Image 1 (cartoon, rainbow, N blue to C red):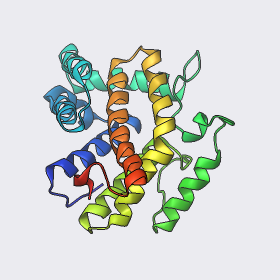
Image 2: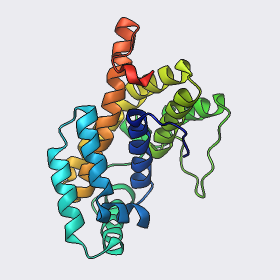
Image 3: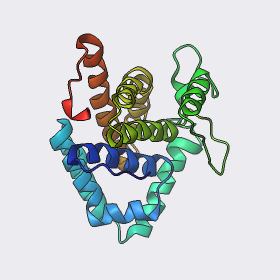
Length: 227
C-alpha cells in the first residue's frame, strides 16, 4: 500500500486502513513495536480528534497495553494468541469470523454472495488477489485494501468516481457486517487490543458511511475533504 497523498486528513484515512490491515491479517512485529513506541496510541488520538469518535476508553487501554509488556516480542505473542482464539480456532468456536459471508442474515456460510461481489469489483478495476493462501475474496482485509485503493486513487488522480465508489462501498457493503463483527469482538471481551481495534474499524467505516448516506440524500458529501 503506497500513497502520494499529502493532505493530513486524507493521510489519516489511509494510515488507519493500513493499520487495520496489519492488525486483521495477523499481528507483525513492526505493529507491536508501534504499540510499544506509542505510535498506535497517537493514531487513536488523531482519529478521536478528526473523526469525532469518543476514543477515550480505547486510548487509555492502548496506553495501558504498551506498559504491560517488556518488549514488542512479548506483545506479539499475546496478540497472536488472541488472534487465533477470536478469528482462527478456539475450543468454544470462533467468536468473530473475518469473512463478510458469515454475517449475512439469510445464509451465514463461507463463500456466500459477497465473495463474487468482491471478485467482480476487483476485476473491474484490473486488480487481482495475490496471497500465499486461498483466502475468500470477502476477507475483511481484502475489503479494507480495496477501500484503500479506491481512496488512494481517488485522491491521487482527482477521481470523484473512485471517491464516490469508496463511500458507497463503505456504506452499502461494509457497514452492516463490520458493525456485527465488531460487536462480536466486544462481546467476547477477552482481548482488549482487539476491542480497541474493533472501535477503530467501526469509526472509519461509520465515518465513510455517513458520507455515503449524505451523498445519496443531497448529492453532496457531508465530509468535503473526501473530495
